[in-house]
Amino acid sequence: GDSAGGGLALAAAMAQTSLRHCLRGVIGLSAWADLTASTPSYDTRQWDEVSCTGDAVNAGVDRKAGREEAEGYLGRGGVEWYGRDWRASPFFASAAKLRSLPAVLLQVGDFELILDESVLLQKRLQELGHPDSEVVVFPRMWHCWHEYSEGSGFNQPLRQANKALKEVAAWVRARRTHGAASETDSCRFGKSGPS
Figure (cartoon, one colour):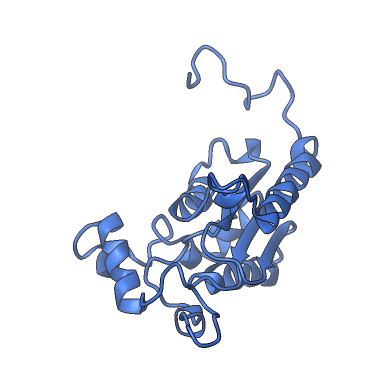
């Protein structure tokens, strides 16, 4: 998933205990994993128009504004009540929850306010001994730059977006057969499974 979808994908992968063994991986593209806006990059990636560095997409967004945006997602008072709940902010998941994740790929832009949510989450996964977690930081890229792979209607595809998507495809291919579920096991949906 991308943005909030990246956070949701991580939380869903931790929550699905009955199907967790079926999941081969989870991908977060510019994953919004900390709805409390607590990471250092909210300060270090502020847009600077003089040097043209930082998060131009979210120019002027500070921690308070980030929490207000999360309130739109969690409801009024939601950050205070649920902001550190792993189901809303996988960044705060317990060690056991994080260890339970399948393979993890996080891609994030170097200019994003939420850069550290992916970088620090992957660092924590690594420290916990997670066997297959990776974060790729793309220089000078903004939030969800992947969406510009086709050129946004201007017939000028963004090279970095295409590179990122090719890396996602290679990552998926490498895990497609690793631990693959057989046609007869519980991972295959039958008549009683979802349609």
